[in-house]
Length: 167
Image (cartoon, rainbow, N blue to C red; front, top):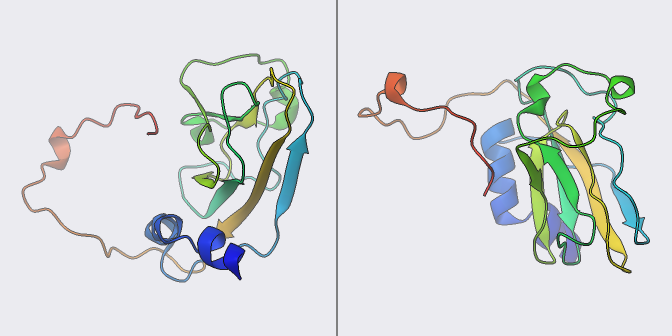
């Protein structure tokens, strides 16, 4: 009950998912548990199975970090904007590092949401520690409808849509 209420239905995370997927998104029906002994080299860049290329947001990848994730514990690393680049896992193995990556570091209890087909991997772990992570996906169940606040003074032609880094 605690896990459902405070993690899977966390108000801030559920609000973000509702904003992106609509009010009746399908909650996770499965969880994958990842743990890793350390030290360990970085993992291989990959996209998850059944990824569909494109900018549409049909499925979000959901990550829960139950213990503190630091730079040294081998956090998950994401390539910002990579869901817009069509690729297959077999063609990604030779890549080493990219500019503009984001490391999922944060306190215990952190939740991260990404586009399902974003490129990601585990970073190199430098300490003798175990990293834990739970992950799943949430899916859109209906086409999106515009229900957000309209700002009549917003000039969409003047908005700078440069590459934004996650906070």
